[in-house]
Length: 382
Length: 52
Image (cartoon, rainbow over all chains, first blue to last red; front, top):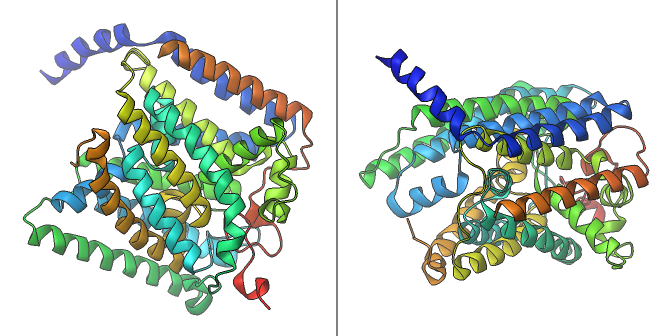
């Protein structure tokens, strides 16, 4: 019976396949990979391919930090959050020890202070208004959600504004990164990271049970989290650092602003060695941009392989306004908070860095505010 | 929406290729964290080196 169903379904899926966007996705990714390969950069091509795989995985598993956090806050459902913690645990098994002992590799670290907390909190508000975080914005843009094109445009603008404000917020003070492996060694750091993840999982399960809600992730969620965790290990091995998303947006925005005649070279952020080089060099020299491009095209391919691409109508104006405001807040918040769910939370915790947990707590608080604001834009609180 | 996507995709690809061909590419892809003194994924300095 199952075989017959599959056989019946295959022509139906093939009939819905959108060959224009499916081929455009593969050809675009291949074009960018060819450009970096011509420069003799196989690791860069690998990052594009891994980003492509991430786009496929996110789309196929419908993996959403934003919806998972919203369901946890509004209904106590913890399955999505447990899936996220599983993803981090998978990535941490490689990232913590390798970053600690292998030269050329490093974890995702960040200072702990007002900038981190304020940025993550504002990001949390934005992700509920936009209905997607950094990775969510990328894969929904790629999969044909026009609303998220608006969110991405304002995300990019917000991150450039945030880059101009970050030095002032850093001047408010803070402490240097706290990394488990610095204190406990590579294996002790990994043990501490996994124990912290288990403790967080136990806490969210306890909350879910108290609220009478489900806390068991779906099979699709478990498979998706595991696949994304494994691919993010590949990104780490190819790029030397945990997967990050939002710095790419800042670079794109900086380059667009420069092309429009805005001189960013005098801004403190753009004088730091990393951003300075990223602004001057090819956008394909930035690791986060490479995976970002790959992820958009991967999601586009996955979407176009299963349905007509971009056929849905534009949403109401209030929904687009929420996407714009949410994108702006996420961009600004990501710069002040040193990343998004991927770069700060997943990357930070998977590196054994304390800032990842602080980012999570602050962003969850922001999400609670964002959920309350959603009805003003015609969006459901659920 | 499809037309919007076609236009955005084409403009983005042209911009990326133009930027790549007209900008220096000094070695392999890097993250801001690869540079000395970086204390965050965006390359921000550590508080201990920033104050005083």
